Image 1 (tube, helix red, strand yellow):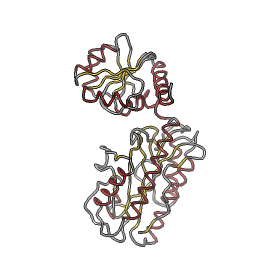
Image 2 (image 1 turned 90 degrees about the horizontal axis):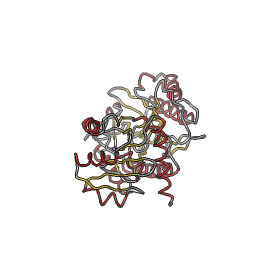
Image 3 (image 1 turned 30 degrees about the horizontal axis):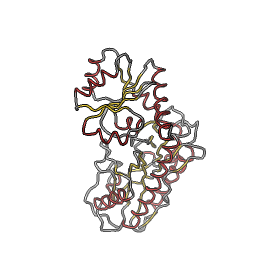
Image 4 (image 1 turned 180 degrees about the vertical axis):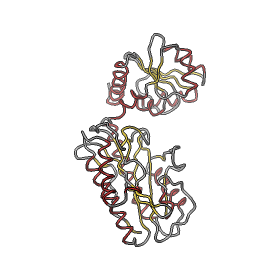
Length: 362
């Protein structure tokens, strides 16, 4: 058995063991992220796993790609829609299944085809993916290296007179040239890159505009990239021209909070405690009212996934978790400052995004 085959076998067994503990003897997977995690194929389909076989049902238009990409699976070709579900029914006879985030209408259809034999169990999939294996960590490290190159590129092209939209476009182009892909994050920005200047930077999830970047602006650049399926998320705040003393104090306060949050993100530490430590730093600087979001979140195949680094979060961090640490302050209608790294939880933490966090004045 080759190394790749072994990696995917281990992931499937881990997921099945979690399912068995809850009384299931097979797993049905539908989200592209989870299918990719278990097969190396990212696309439409249904993946059925038990301890003896793994079957991937795909529509005809994805069949050839699935044959090339999916590792150690039996591939079934079917017409889109009800025919694919009929194939699931045929393969799932005799099983009690758990499944991930199926659309409601699909889940209802499968529930009628498999009465009392299929249940949603999102937590099982979250638990399976929350600790990254060596291959995932290697991929994330490479994504971090690309991220650092992107911020170096931003430093070269950020000048007074460029628009937010133009800067974002240059970043996305360079991202793809470096063999990574933009991530569209529908819950927040419509852009895979947040470029927020001047008063726009006071909006944590600002959308990119045609505003011309001016001397005296803070410019928040938040980049989300996907490399070989895995997401790296980082933010740096630049200043156009010389920053005044008030802005320097605010930047230093965020930087100190971020550095302390990263330092404390070690195995055994409660996620909520990391958040509390970061908030205490900003509170001591008189800025707690301007910190209006959580300290961080997990990353992996999704932009936001467990664990959550937020108040009262009781989960203990474990070695191999991938998270962000991203405190920020937002002074309404004036400016914002955010500094974010992606890290792997270890002792000391492995910082994936190494571009300088000292204030860069361009």
